[in-house]
Length: 487
Image (cartoon, rainbow, N blue to C red; front, side, top):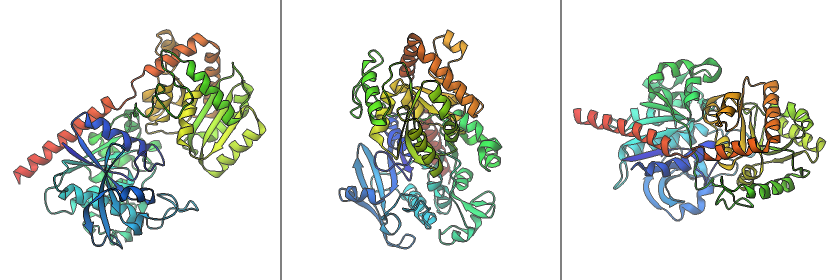
């Protein structure tokens, strides 16, 4: 069957977070389920050279203020459909924000255009290729089902995937006209959200099925503390909501063959991890210490990620004899706080502000444990990378973190099945108990190595999850074809 993905990001081409990793990896796994995926993406400036190698498959005279086209390109084993609209995407700055960190003022048009073209391709297809189902991802593609509803002929069913409900794409209702959305859609059952337009709410309300990235997160979305104002709608659509765990690309994240780390290693031979550990000490300015564990953080620096709790705990972490290596960027006060902690505890705390994909691989390969104290976490990928590399995750018990890590409690340790440490509630005190427990476990080398090996053997691929997605697509495709025949 044929499937159209509509997304604002895709690794390795353009990435700000886990959404890109999913879009870059899931289509490869779906190919093993006989699902042919093509990915519609905005042609940001990062795609300038790639556009030159492609073939134009669709021309649009005017799309929200300027001409546009769709260019088909095969790159890195993925079939991309690049929405080339220079007036919307070819600009300095980030894909969502300008150089000053402010949201682009025309984001409603930039991602409304993505959704509009996604619906157009879903309904009309391309020469020799017609999608059976469309899967729109996150708020940036949330208007796809709205535009599909305005097409006066049978159209494919739409699946909407929530990667993070906190980002909702909310805009002034007066922009409905600019977006070409029918007035009849401006209702509580449609695009309206407290007098505004919400792209995310639209995707949830109008799609045939809603998926999200872990079973626990699917349940959490029904609760006020996690639903971000949409828990009522999520409860109303509960029968169509499915939580499916994310996976990782085992070719990209493989300690046995990873070219981005100093020494490769495997579950059978862990010696290479020590070599990577030495390089981490060197890169982060940490004083070499054989018996002092290195905790790492690879994350956006935000309160959602619970990193304010970690910042408050640095004194105690260092007091336990542990060390910290942190890579990330985000809220300025957190950046400044961790930089100051590195200055204060030189040799015990190392901080690099920014984004560095190769370094993130080295950190997974060279550190002993990875800290993920998120207040909420739809799925999380860094803990899966940690499992894969034998870097034991210390995580808050929420969302996908709860679904993927087996806590080293007494029962799990007795049964030899623990793969990390969970803590709850998400408080500074609970986080420090978890860090302290990790330090104690680390002293027992036999226990720690056993947990490392179990972690590395944990199934973290897309295989099972891709099968679940394929089943949903197949069911919707059959229903759509049946309805079409009835008409």
